[in-house]
Length: 155
Image (tube, rainbow, N blue to C red):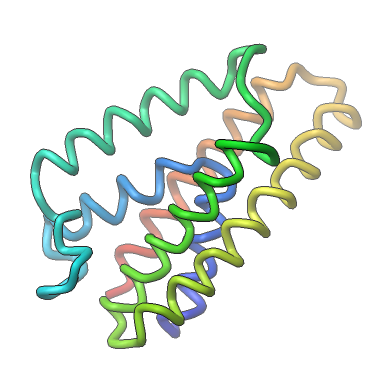
């Protein structure tokens, strides 16, 4: 599977949960599943980075279920998805021997796709299934986690 397609998939996962894919990339780099080489992104393989991203991802998984959770399609949530989608896409491109800037662009697009598409799917499922929002949110968590780890184990 091509590295740029995987960058797109990981970007979509960033659109669903902004911190889960960076944590997965960091774990993968630390466990030598992916090789970031001597790139500027090699800091993701550092153990403190793995710990911090893991804690932040876990916190996001909890806070997303709260009624006070911010809208992912506005402000800081959208900006985080743009930046982190690009970051994850660049990492996947490096691991797949592609140009990092191209991976960043594809990851950014995937982040936007996952952000807006995920929001639409989530709100429509809640209405059509007549279930509480957190039920669909947990399903979204599973997709983001499984998708992220699927991508980082393809190298």
